[in-house]
Length: 159
Image (tube, rainbow, N blue to C red; front, side, top):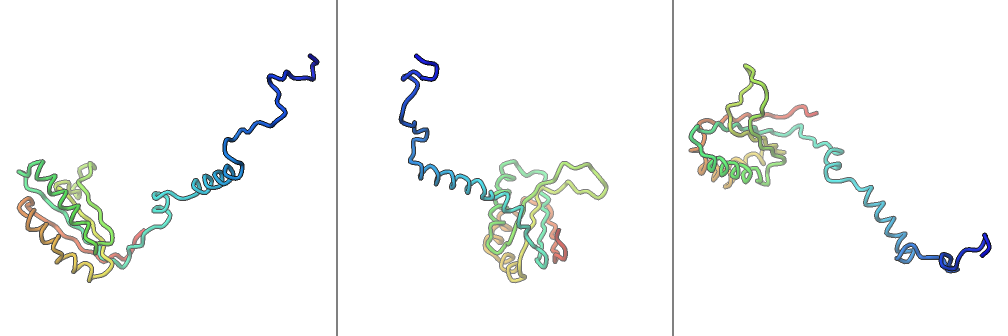
């Protein structure tokens, strides 16, 4: 066999089809994959469009639970808070527990839960205040807390 000749075992006169799909389907698939990769994720979308909450009412509530509340009661209370914060008139809501920050004279770690709710209008707040889910929450869980502190603020600056 000459040096410039290849064995017929390795050489074919027909080009091999490396891609099992027809070329136009393969190209469309590549384009679609590229477009999908360029789409922002939910997390990216949320961070790219900051939410404006100025001129809203912020309703902040701190619940101080009784010392004798059982873990099961606390779990039920937390479920009740989540249901409460799902009321449609609430624009945005957050649920928290005491952070493990250092003790300071001005820091209060003695509360059990905190909620932060934003309302677009005073009417939304009033609907929430009288909402059956809110009334049911108070009736069902008020025996679990020793104190409730409510701080309502008109937001004037958000960064």
